[in-house]
Length: 182
Image (tube, rainbow, N blue to C red):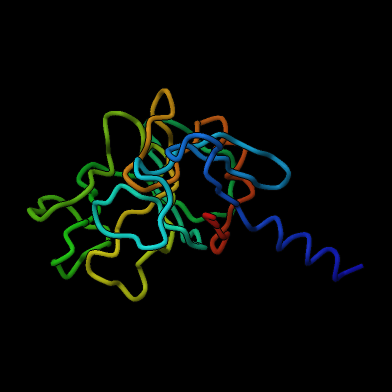
């Protein structure tokens, strides 16, 4: 019986993202028997990710933690480590910079993502381990699991779901949960 339980719990720790039929900018996210609609990169899914290509990498990426705009919303309890997003928090996406694909603080002149966005996309922003450990220049940065734009508009390469969908998913997410984009 223990083997079935551990196999079942490891299956639950995988979130599968597949391109939606007939629209390469949309996806279906499957987790623990649920299927949620999502948006992915404007260029669809790619096996060869490049900085700025607008594609979501075909990969198995682990969640490592996240950021939450606690001034805007409250998350349900989650074992995933999260930090409050604060003004001045940025994410470096300048391939030639030593802090490429790392969180940085303002003021920061090289190219970067604002983590405190007015549009609410990063009100919940979960960081995946894409190109983090052994960073390769131009291999893509800031691949997040975040909130969606109205109308499921495509992302720059991230995976985005609605707030209700993320509220259903996040209690089951933990450090090491795999987001498998196929």
